[in-house]
Image (cartoon, rainbow, N blue to C red; front, side):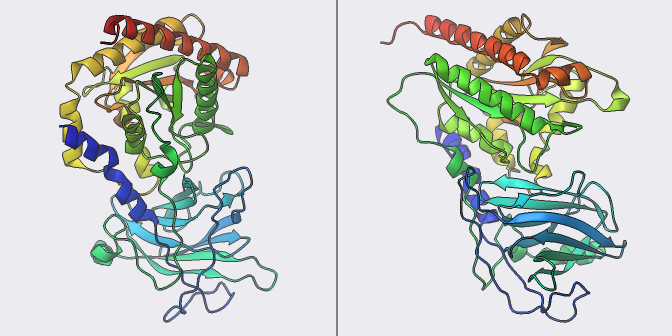
Amino acid sequence: MENRAKHLVFLGCGLLCAAASVFAVASAPSAAEGPQTGQSAPPTSAPAATSSDASTPNFPVASGARLAGDDKQTRFILDLDRKIEFRAFPLADPYRVVVDIPQVNFQLAAGTGSAARGLVKAFRYGLVMPGGSRIVFDMTGPVKIANSYVLDAANGQPPRLVLDFEQVDRTSFVQSLAPESRPELKPAISESTTATIPAVTSAALPPLATTDARPLIVIDPGHGGIDNGTQSGDQTEKNLVLGFGLALRDRIEKSGKYRVVMTRSDDTFIPLNDRVKIARAQSAALFVSIHADALPRREGDAQGATIYTVSDKASDAEAERLAEAENKADAIAGVNLTDEPTEVADILIDLAQRETKTFSNRFARLLMDEMKTTVRMHKHPLKSAGFRVLKAPDVPSVLVEIGYVSNKGDLEHLVSENWRNKAVGSMVQAIDTFFAKRLATAGPAK
């Protein structure tokens, strides 16, 4: 079982590296945006942004994006300030097209990508890992990428990434997904210079501090990068929970009692299984995932914070709905590299370890008792569901929905620094009580 656990911790790293390590580039023969015919021109390459320092970025800028065409042929155009490398590939069930590019500073108008046009239902974009961005198109059905290229700047027009989609039948589509072109099995091969994006796990896992005996707490702000989470107006869940998580980290570190690791400390997408791996690789003593929920208008209103622990069976329909939505986060980024039936079965077996579940439930109750004295709680504040992010078998874990962005009162709290400070303070008090009781139960070291 120990070998299986070690295998699970590192399983996804190689797949993630392989899926993002190669970008194929094709250059159009001219700067015209008319339909291309015949074979594409020989591939060219442009240097990718290599800076990983977010404080002094030198990333390409995307200033505009648009769709044109109909339900037979649809074109996507992305305006850039320089040429970039890219790799585009289709996926099925649901039908999508994924475009991997070096890290780009998206400066697109609000609402870009939300309107349907031709073969494209919608598209989304954002950072998917340090050094790499992604554009994901939700398609109306099976398509092929008829043309894809980067145009040089010409006639007063900026460099442009252009993709042409054409409608095809299911059989043709499946035949286009040859094994050598499936990104989950083998990266696309090109004779052009390739751009390598570093794996997210290498940046997210600092070295273990083996000489520091203080308990290590992992704080996991949900979503990030291409995955906005829930949204209300210009307020996104990914930003709200990141601000909360950073404030919680600072308060915990200020006490000097604990070490803290963040699964993300910026606007980066982290796959769900990698969040679990971070906690396990660090031998964390506690894992706290921070989220903010939202209810569709047709389902009425809800308010207050809710604390979740893992369970194979959801405590109620709302918990099941939320877990199902959160567990789809990897698919939002276009490629789900975590479909590992054997390893998931191992996790479920390991979850039988009663001690971890007991500690998770104990911390959840302590957290509820502290939070209800300072912040508004949901009418049913303790729930359970099958959240993938809580399935570390040896790390006590909870997921805290700090409020509903769909509720006006909760949203006012979520953007309030005063409210955040109170909520963070109650969480730190619960953490202190939790570890005090654990140390007292364990007794002196022998």
